[in-house]
Length: 171
Image 1 (cartoon, rainbow, N blue to C red):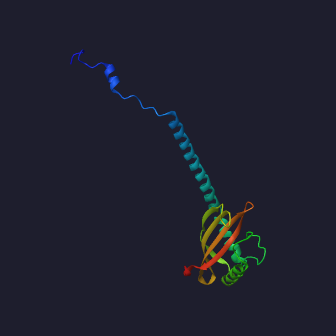
Image 2: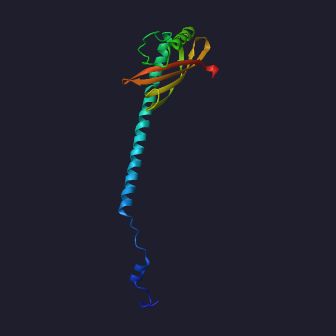
Image 3: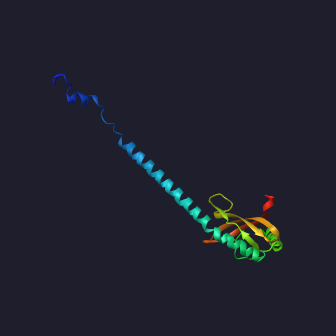
């Protein structure tokens, strides 16, 4: 191929497509959508980070509460400072719980509680931050019970909203 037969560089330039240019409005819209997605992700991470911290924060207090309640043979019949205002634990249920604890005695062993946090907002009957903890407790006379404690945050502190025990074999 001789130099005169070779295509000129300007021909190659004309054969290439011009670079595509997105309209300015589309670029702005895509940046706004990307920014909103980042904010949503950060909000979810903040919310779930707080819930995880709440559930981890309640593990040792749950174990301590089970030990103290079983050693004291239950909650005080009226005005126990550990119970939340408007607790789900009714006076009748509290009486049954105290009677059950009186017959089993103190706990010998308590498994590490597993806690789950959730938050209720809006049209729920009860609003707030809640943590539900489950543990297995071994008592005297080879009695095993599942203990469920629901904590609620009120005025910046955690209180017991519900406390229930069931025979581990019944489950």
